Structure formats: structure tokens, C-alpha cells
Image 1 (cartoon, one colour):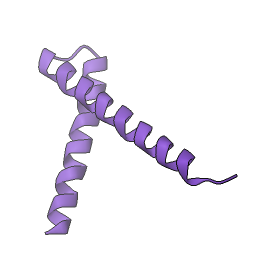
Image 2: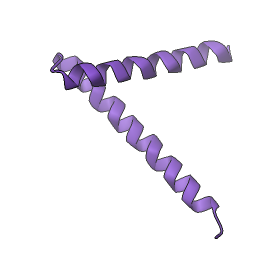
Image 3: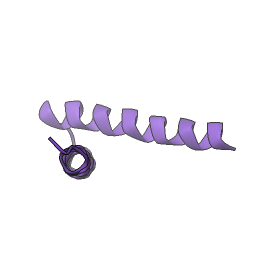
Image 4: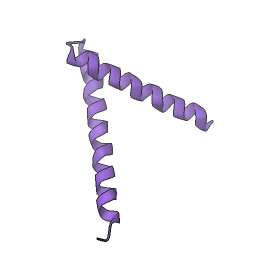
Length: 59
């Protein structure tokens, strides 16, 4: 079950990356919408990773 879930997440990530590339080259409107959602999700993941990494260190 976990393998299927992981495969689904990887497929969504690859599809989102494909839409980002396609939208950058002037793709259809739906591809630009998916690309914007993908970039927003990547920004949220990046922010949570930086917050967690910065909060754990006691230097």
C-alpha cells in the first residue's frame, strides 16, 4: 500500500514538473494553473524545511 502511495506522489511530482516546463514555453492555460500550484507547493515545502532546520540547531 505504501508503495502505491509513493508511486502516486512521484507521478504527481513529475506531472507538476512537466507542467512547469510546458507553461514556461507557453503551454495552455490549465498547464499554467497546475504549474502555479506546483511552484506554490514547492515554496511551502521549502519554507517548512528551512524553519525546521533552523529551529533544531542550538549553536
